[in-house]
Image 1: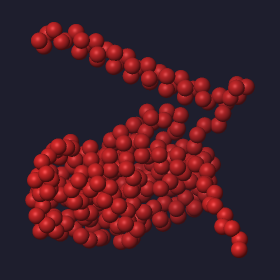
Image 2: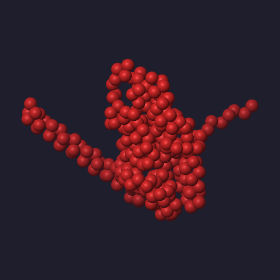
Image 3: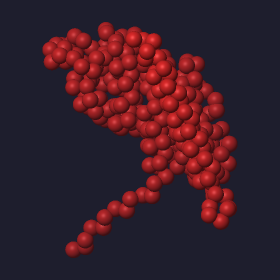
Image 4: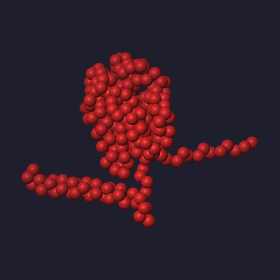
Length: 288
């Protein structure tokens, strides 16, 4: 039976490979043709997309961010993709901005909430040296972020089909970095609600630092509610100290950080496109 199926399988592989190759060629051709107007003049290229990562001493973090950059480049070949860090890794954001010169660009924070870095650090860095640069919204909350969280949990062992009894005994702790900014907690709670709707079980947000509850406290709260099959969902963009600590506290399974999942690359480009879209005019109130 296996031998008789092999030619069909190999043919399917060849067809899939050929289709992927043709799609790649078509994308590159459309990209090149799109650079020129009808009169043959060269059109100005799109603004650069600068990924703004936090930075980490863990070398896996930089590797993950670079893998995400490559995925974004493959999805949008015409867009120059660059990288800047808030701290700890090079290039630092001021250096990345200086390298742009006067070229237009959009900064897309690889951050998941409206915390201090998004509200103050990044805008202040832009205002100091590059007022022509736009800053996109952080990646969360958003359904594509939840798609990634869900996929990482499934990869870690979360079963997509369970009995009602199993579901009643299950729960998830959404582990995030934490921030003293109350807006950050609002965003994390919204992501937790979206993930809970997707999974059909309670999802409790918890934090590695600067906010409460902690991961152990969230685990205890779920246990007190009769939830004994508890997973930890890693709401971190890349591996690092906080992500590792939270995963080690999981009583059952812990998902990998968000990383370079395809949905994350689409989310990055969505935030880029949002930043470039014309502002929607607000409706005028009729005068009395």
